[in-house]
Image (cartoon, rainbow, N blue to C red; front, side, top):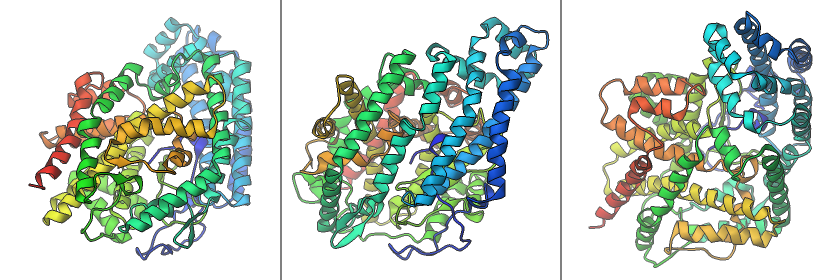
Length: 618
């Protein structure tokens, strides 16, 4: 569900032009993406040429501009010269992004393949070495006097890059001496990057024995949504057994990265453990605190209330943790073939806006999607923007369930957003995580509402509503619980290394309150923190999901009551990319995330769905 930064490029090479069916089920021909739009292969001459070109361009850029920006800013033609420098910098960033995107996308197709792992590792190292020549640029820009830089942005072509420059200026209080920044940058390959890679390869290599089958993570998690309780239990037990056997490794990775973050935060002067994430998300700490407080206060009327209702449907006082996402009893399991899933999403998008469907269709027609489940393939799903000079790619692990259709809609929402934002260029197309989830969750909501509208059978409607409520609880309540876990984890890590058992205890300390008394957290559940990649790759990323979901619920409420013109404003918001603050983007819709009441709008929508489910019981 996440959009990875370029340094975390993920996915796979689809050398074969043919689509095929997965062994996990007959869902039709599942597409594999074509990475030839980036490079033809690992040994492609164009790849080697671009790598050499990038290294030379970085060195030449440093020779041309290092140590000169202050003098240029005071000159008569400062705006034109600084514009030329930033434009050159952007061109190099696009080239570097193309290279590392390809290497990362290739690697994620099979993280257990030594050849791909080496290729990705070598690419990371070469790009890190080359880009160290660029580090000076933003540091020097931030040393220019405010008055001089403001004058340059007001008087000439540099105005084009104002949003990016203003973003860079927000980093100014936390930047270090040039040499220290270079050291942090170069050691990232053997530091955070290496530990991230160890996590990925460890997860991909794990096997879980479920009912006589040896499975990778993704199919095992999928079995926890099986209609048979014994299968769900077997999957949960298999997860717990294998994760427990590997807890020492996961605890070591978590401890090391926790300390790494503490060192970085301390040197840069961040006060709160999540402040660096808030800064990168361009969101104020008090906004996030208000979101967290609103969600936690809503536990009794949301998650506690819903799981109590679900336990009643199952005829028990408490649901076991492996039954939390179980399909409802006595409702036939719906399986979607790939073509049906594609048509469902495109029709829902098209009903909102033909433009939205047209963009999304390109992902299918031009092979920008990788769908089959394969051993070694990165688990989960994501949309990778690559670079503006190319196009995004989407990875899913499709297994035919209704949630897989929603995941496809979600990731295509990201993809549409990334296509629309691309004209802003490599520096201003990227969107903060909090806003990056807006288009994805909105696309998911459009698809759900379209399916619900054509469902007339009461049992089917209840099943659909229940599934959507569960998804929203997973996106809002559960992700805020993840955030609370991370806060406890990073706070305790500052007092010393944590044992695996201590981390498990911290995990359990937040789960019971978020899920409520109707969920029994049995033995083995304490290990489930270990497989969640967000804790490793992007600390404190998780609240962005809750931010996006509540924001979209509010947006959707505006859409339902809107006059003509909503779609145009919506596309303008997406097309802005990273050029505007969330307050500017939401203002045309009459929304303000700084208003404490804002979060209640989104939470009330979830509460309303639960009330509708309760009414069906009467």
